[in-house]
Length: 580
Image (cartoon, rainbow, N blue to C red):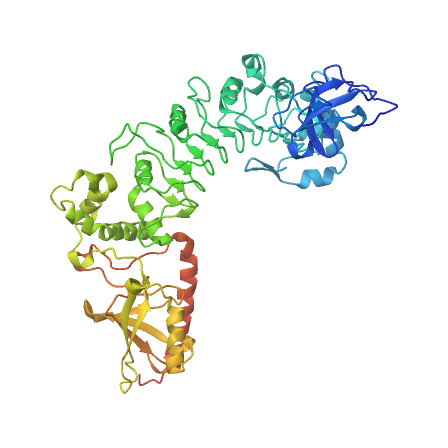
C-alpha cells in the first residue's frame, strides 16, 4: 500500500456502489484512511474472490467484511471507475461502429433479436440495446431515456456497474415497451419497498438473472415487481431450499434453475405455479421426485400445465422416479441424460426403451422425437423384458402389489398388445461374456461344396466386424458380401441384414440361427423382399422379436444407408445375365 499525491473526487454515496478496477468488478465496502498510510482508500469486495487479498482487515483492524475470507482489497480511488449513465454508455457503444452493431443478431437468454424492420438507423428506432459488460451505473437525467430510446423491447445490462434494483427500475420505468431484460452477473441490493416499482416492470415478459448470487427468498421478495413475467432464468445462483410462491409469479410459464444446489424435498413447492409449462432442473443434484398425492399409475394434481421437463446431469438412479414422472398429466418432452438410470443389460438403448414404455404421453426424449414405430417397439420389448417377473407375480390374474408398484403401466400395455407368449419372454441372465455369446452357423447357399461353419459371437458384434471375420476365412472383400439369416422359428423366411453399422442383436439374430453368406453379389440375387429388415411379428401380429428400433435421430443415417443399398442392387441387377 502506497500513497497518491492527487485523489479524484469520490461520490458521497460511494459505499455500496459498484466499481470497475483492473479488469475486474467489485463493490465498495469502505471509504476512508488506512493508517499508517496517508490519503484515501476504497475497501472493495471483488466479484471474483481470487482477485482479493484479505477479509477487509489491515494490521489487525477490521475496516469492512467480505463473504469470502480472501475477497477484499484496498485500492486507490484513481484506479477505480464508478461508471457512466445508460445513455452515455449507449453513445459510446453504438456510435463507435453503428454499421457493425445494426448488422448483428442479438441473443437475449436463448431468444434471437434482429434488426429487421429498422428503417432508419437512429436511437429512436432501436428495438433492443445490448450493453453487456459495460460500465452503466444508472439512468442519468430524468426522462432522457424515454425520449431517446422509445422503442426498446429488449435490454441487456449483464455485468454492469448497477448496484441496486432502484437503479434498474429508474431505467426500465422509462421504457414503456420493454418485454425482455437480461441482468446476468450483477450484484443488486434489494429494494426497501419492492411494491412501489411494479409499474417499472409492468410489461416485462422475460427476466434473466443468472449468476447474481440470489437466494430463493430474495427472488420471492422481488417478484412482486414483475407482475406479468412469463420466463425467468435463475441459473447458477445460491438457490437451495424452495418456498411456495403463493401470491407472486402466478403468470410464470418457464423457469430455469440450472446448476443451483437444490434441496430436493422442496421441489414440490413449485407446484404452486399454476401456469408453469417448462421447468429446467439440470445440474441441481436431485435424485428423487415423488408425487405422493397419486397412487402408482394415477395422475397427480400438481404441475397441471408442465409439458417440458429437463433433468439432465443429476443423480437419478432409481426407475421409480420415471414412474413418478408418469403421474404428470401434461408431460410430453423430457431430457434426462447424464443420470445413472441403467437397464439390467447396461445398454443405453434399452434404458431409452424403458423410459418410453413407462411414459405413455411422451413425444420427445433427450431432444429426439419418439416415432410411433419406436414407441411400439419399446412397449413390446418392455412387455417381454418383464414378462417372466409378471408371471411370477400373478400374471393374467392379479399381479401382486410390489409388481404393480415397480411397473404401474404394465397391465395397460398387456391390455394394448396382449399377454406375452412364453417363447417371447426375455429371461434375465448374469451380465457375463459367456452369457452374451450366441452360437451362429454360417452357411453358403451359392457354394454348396463349402461346409457350414459354427461360431460363438457376441450378440453386440456389429455386422461390419462379422464381415471382417468372414473376410479372413473367405478372402472376399466385405463390400462384396451380403448377409441374411434364417431362424428355426420361421425356417421358410429369410431375413435381410442390410446395415453394417448395426449389431446382430439389432436384427434379432439369436442363438441357433443360420447366417446365410452370399459371396460376389454380381452372381447372386438375394431371395428376400426388398426393404424387409427384420422378422415378421409372431402369431396374432402383436409381438415383434426385433430388439430395438432406431429413434428419429438415427432415421436419416439409416435412410441414407438404405438408399446406397438400393443403388447397389440396381447396379447388380443390370449386371446380371439375362437368363438369371
